Amino acid sequence: MKKIALLVGLAAAFGFNNAEAVDWNWKGDVRERYESQLTNTTTVTDTPGSSRARTRVRLGVYPWINEELSAGVQISTGNDTPAETISRNQNFGSLFQPKSIYLNEEFVDYHPMSYGLNGKVNLIVGKREVASTLVRIDNLVYDSDLTFEGATLQYGKDSDGKDKDGLIAVAGYYTLNSWSSTTVTDPALMIGQLAYKGELNEMSYTVGGAYNMYRSVQNISITGDKAAIGTDTNGAYYSAPTPAAYPNSRYNIAELFGKIGGQLTDTLPWKVYGQYAHNTASNAKAIAYNRKNAWLAGVSLGEAKQVGEWALDAKYDHIERDAVFPLFTDSDRKVGTIVNVKGFEVAGTYHLVQNLTVGARYFHYSNIDKVAGDPTLHQVQLDALVKF
Image 1: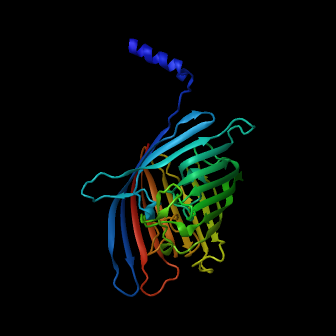
Image 2: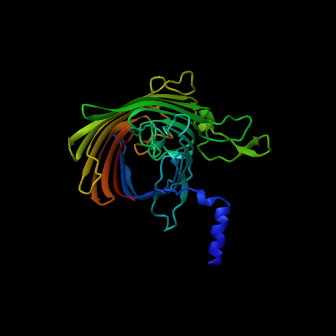
Image 3: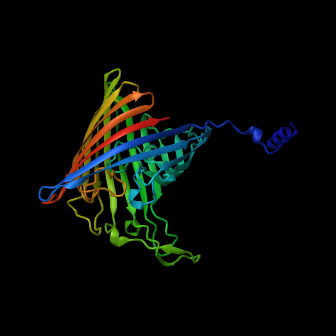
């Protein structure tokens, strides 16, 4: 008892008794996936099919500290290969070795109540998932697993990153590589978004646009090359960028997006959605000026939020070679390359038991500039997802 009294006394002396209770908000999910892939050609024999079992695990805590301050920390499976920045999956089959765990999110969210702001503005610093950072319709420009690193200023989003009704504005600055060099400019991404969420004749809608400006793309390292090429002002070595592996030096992507939806019945919602992207960069090395557009259009029925409910989704994608930044768009539609592809996806989901959904998705993609011998992708993903 004396030790407890001493600890309480020390806490009171240091002012800890004035600390507010923290709402920790734990969230997580586990997804098990079986994936089968086949590519066929019109000339030579078909490529043998491949299959793999994969897992994705995420666990995070998002404490609400006080009315002006919240934060988030999330760990996840994944790997540190630059080409896998948009995937948190890990394959089975490594002789039962343990899976790697990484820091997937870490951020501080300051939403001041003073100066008439009343918590309407979020200033976020750190690493946070794309859907909570931006207004995101689908994966044309940014894959859902991406987590931005930098600073974001938001208006019209709540502290959980969900879009509020009315005007939504987002501005962000994100570092892509940090060279610690006086001669090599750090590549970076700057984003500005403006959108509006509202209702019309009992239908909800979101419309908006964005500008995604990449700086010094030629200095991006995608190979993990650690060869020292010089020293910074402190004498520390820095590694070389790999412009030869990434020749396109400019991406200034203008984007339009929107969705509209309503209810067919009380338990059966519908939604139509679309995105368009155009790379406005000019005088840029290696850009094909007639290959700078991308778009997708889709329709969904149902949400599978409750046990016994189901959802269907279908969409078509057309992504030209220099339209979007290829390291950040969805890689599941890869046919030799992630860009220069066109095709469709169809998916179904069923809420089997509380917090468990099962689903299947089929991918059918080919190259836009298809020549004899180019493959066509046929891919099936079977998922079991538990959220808690």
